[in-house]
Structures are given as C-alpha cells and as structure tokens.
Image 1: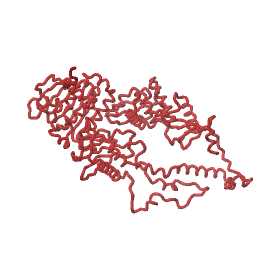
Image 2 (image 1 turned 90 degrees about the horizontal axis):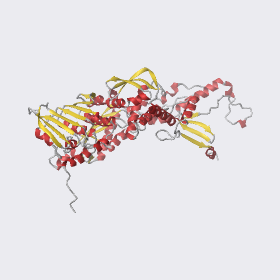
Image 3 (image 1 turned 90 degrees about the vertical axis):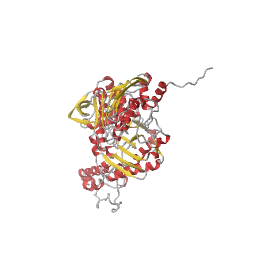
Image 4 (image 1 turned 30 degrees about the horizontal axis):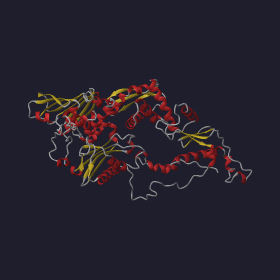
Length: 615
C-alpha cells in the first residue's frame, strides 16, 4: 500500500491560507490599507468597482519597494517586521504576518507597481493564482499601486458565497472608516464605481469623525481622556440623547489598531448606566495606548481580537474615563454637597388647593426641575401619573362648577346611610372601547374581556399592508407640503440608493440633493406627514438593525422597519373611531395574533377567570 500523506503544492496551500485571511473583498481592502499606512503614506486613494468583486485598487505615496521586495512580498511567511519570536510582543505596526499578499495573489489577479524615491524606475509585478506572469521595470510615481481584479476567479464556490453588492460595500466602508479614524493625519479617499464616497483631509480626530459620519456629530461628542501608569485612554463618546438602536458606530483602537471587545464594550455601557433608554447604544471612538508587552494581538487571523494581561484594570480605567467625560460635560447627574439632597430638587407647595379650587401650572412647576434631554430617564418614574392626577382633579373641579348644587349633597358614607342623599348627576356615555394607560385597548367579547396591545397590533397591520404593496408595487404616495432635506453619511446614502426602487414602490418619493443628501418629497399614504425626516432616519436605523440580526429579504426588512418606526407608540390617546378601526384592521390581517417580531397582539381574560378574583 502506498503512502497516503503528501505535501500540498504551494498554490493549494496559499488558497487554504487565503480562506483565513481573505474572506471577502473587505478583507483585501483591510490588508492593502494597513500596508499603505505601514509604508508611511500621507495620501491614500481606494477605488472599488462592483463592490470589490471586479476591482480593488489602492494607490499610496508611501516609501515604495525595490524590485526584490516587490517580488518577495508575495511569498508565504515573508515579512519585514518579525525576526524573532519575541518580536511578536513588541509590534506596533499593522501588517506583520507575511501571509496577506500571498493569500490575495492566490485567489485574485494582482498587478503591483512600486517605486522608491532613490530609484529612477519602479517595478511591475503581475501574479495570477500564485503564478508570476510578469516582472519588469516600469515608470511609475513614488509609492505603491496595488490592483486586485476578479477576486476568487479561480475559486467559484467561494465567489458564490459572497453577499449582494450593498452588503459587501458596507463591509468595505466599515474597514475604510476604521483605518481612517485611526490615522487622522492621512488624506484618504474612497471611490465606488467612479463615484466619490469619501474625501477626507488630514486633521484632528473630531474633524475626521464629522467627515465620516456627518455634520450632526459636531454637537453630540464629549471628549474623553484618562492617563495612568498602565495605559492612556482618549477619544470621544456620544451624548445619551443621540443614542441609536443599532451598535454600528462604536470603535475601540488599541495602539491605533481596531479591535472588537465585548468586554470593553460592557465597560462603556456600564458607565452610561441610567442615562440611556432601553435597547439604545451610544456612539464612541476610544483609543487605548498601552505597552505592547501587556497585550497579545496574534490571537486571530484578522487581528481584530487581542488579549490583555490585566483585563480587570483595563476595564476599570475605561469605565472611569467614560464616566469622567460624561460628568465633565454635565451629562451625568452630579451631587452638590452644599445642598440638602432631600429638599434640593423637590419642595412641596405650602398650601394644598381645596376641592373647589383649580390648581395652576405654577403649583406643579417644582415637579419639572429636570431636563429630559439630560438622559436621567429613571427619575421620571418619581412623577409617573402626576399629569393624569392633575387632569382628573381639574375634571372633577369643572364638574363641581357645572353642578354647584351637588356640593351640598355629597356625603362620605354610602347611600344606605341616608335615603335622601343625592349623587352628582354626571352623564357618561357607554363606550365599547377604552384605553388602559394609553397602552392597551379593552373591549368585551362573548367569552370575557379582550385586551389589544395597540403598538403591536398597529405594527402587524402596517407590516402586512406594506409587504403586499412591495410585492405588487402598488403603494400610493402623499406629497409633502414642505419637502425636507436629509443629510446622510456615505454608507447610509449608498444603502438608500440600493433600495430606492423598493422605497418608491411603497410610496416614498425622494431625489438626490448632492453631497450625500436627499430631498424627501412624499411618504406612503398611510403615514402621517410632518415628520418625514425623523421617520426616514428612524427607518434607516431600523433597517440596518434588522439586517444585522435577521436573515430576511429586502422586501420583508423594509416592511418591518417602516411598520416598527411608524406605528402608534405607547402613550398615544386614541378616539373611539381610531380604536374601532384598529381592531377591525387587525382581525382582517392574515396573522392577527402576533406582531412581526413575534409578540402577542391580543389577550382574552375569560369570565371564569374574572370570577375567580372575587371568590
């Protein structure tokens, strides 16, 4: 029997290694950007076509390579940074593994041009599937231009597993944003299909954040800085009132290298505790500078996960730095030790109005001493029901004024105490529906009492309506009286353009305004007008959240996102006609029992169950 174990050919070994390093076009972008940064480039231009599937080209003005280095960089385990095993614990540069270029050349058609400042001519190297096709001198500017065409052309199975162009472009933009944030002193630009997506000039971190995410971030950033003997933390955190429902814009950098760390993310969220609404996530861009000997970055092929030798201390410092930033900018509540905390913010009125007197707004002014925008949402629970109490009292007072004779006939005892007692005659119309705390709709049915969750029910109604319109392309639009302009970041603008056909099909009408802005001219006929801008922004965030959490089609995602963001919210008071229409439409749905997210829309409290409460 012959021997079974054989050595793999180099081209197959490189393809296997590429499976770890090159997972999608964004992986190539990441490696090329990091190589350009390590080469000392001050100007980087990234060009992609067909979301990187057809072309990825990166041009930089770095130090360039000699003809030997240009050829050697495509060999496996070839690196300019590692000489001994100890070097792994003192790495401050990006690309060091010596597998990236070899892996890219194994699954793509690569053309590299490079020249050093001291050389008159540069070098051209062409490689396909790890095979060198051409190497010759060429006239080229100082720096390096790397062109990767037809990624995975020789591995069709891998190419078939790539996602749609919008998804792959989103991953490319993510990688570009991370490198751009970590290297604010470099001019960087990104072009997709000959359209400019980003053009960022060198400057401060705050300028780079605004350049990437938009001008609205100018007013929502709080600077953060803390330095200890072990490490230094600096960057920006977003103010709580600008928190979003998605986790997207959250960045950690350790020694200028982007990392993913749920552990440090928990430290930031703990610092925001009590300041954020439920299921909301703040923006933050935090940089950690630490001696490389305290971390291990060689634990993951993409180098996005690292280990600290003292994680608890790092956690505590990050948490303290964020809390200090929030306190410094008067975002977190602070205590004035010169005041009595028992009476500083709440002083009851000296005299309480009697039943025959109306309470004025000034009597309750002391209840409204906190600014909601400061994010102290938990304190609002102290005053829950106050407005309803005021309304009930005023209603009672108005009734007493209308029927003054009733004031002399009211007794504290029951009717059995006095046969001559007369109750105030208040006409009350019997209503088939009534709301419970502007949250649920209650009505009687044959078997008992039915409760309807108004928000979940409305979500189900809108979801099925929008989904049908998307399938039939039959949505109607109502024109906005005053069209609104909405500025988007490049990633969101690209997303909106990709699903423009579907949005038009359900009634959204908008046009390009230039510089990643759109003008909203109309919204679906079933939605209220007047808040088109807020509705559209909320839809984009919900669409992105669904995309990251669910594997559903674009049509279903759009229907879910709009239904979620435009449905009746808790606290909305409904008329009899609105409640009746809501219930009628709910039971006309295909699946009236559950919301699109799977929550119950109705509950019936049976008569037998009600009777048990009185036994």
